[in-house]
Image 1 (cartoon, rainbow, N blue to C red):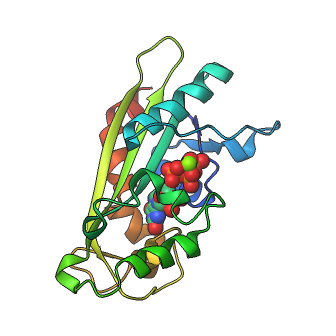
Image 2: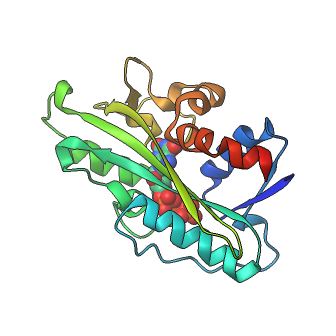
Length: 197
Ligand SMILES: O=c1[nH]c(=O)c2ncn([C@@H]3O[C@H](COP(=O)(O)OP(=O)(O)OP(=O)(O)O)[C@@H](O)[C@H]3O)c2[nH]1
Ligand SMILES: [Mg+2]
């Protein structure tokens, strides 16, 4: 395989998949590269895996090609796992990264450091015409800061401290993030498929 379509319109994800797949010699195309506009796929699942499968199968069936989809987000323990599958839309349907992370910080006001634990989760689903879809889940454990720090990455990266780190993911280089991220931990489980497809 020398090219793979990722069923996403999220530029941050596309950048990370491009970097991570380059070592397998795989060129990444996203829904942003299609000639025709692709309608937003409704994420009606209650888990990351369900939503990843919905996105991968929608595009695989429509275009009759193999597709990988990522559904991801952040679970904050003191917020009973929120924002979870609603991470992109936590502060509204406009999917504003800044508003989303401000809402998490506000909802955690007064919560002491040891109770600010959280994790990023990534479900990566592979759908191929006529074959069974499969999904692999990766996580990255950490905690939530009290203020945003750093300007790399995307989404909630400026408020996420990986376990044992004093820097947020937004203060990591892309190479550093891609070595420990939830997305990395999902993708390594696809290695056998990637090498043989
Ligand atoms: O700081 C972050 N670092 C990450 O590495 C990361 N991965 C996911 N997220 C958040 O979770 C939502 C996913 O929602 P999501 O999987 O539905 O994606 P999306 O709606 O943005 O695009 P699409 O792939 O559905 O087209 C995103 O918008 C982000 O807010 C991240 N935040
Ligand atoms: Mg989405």
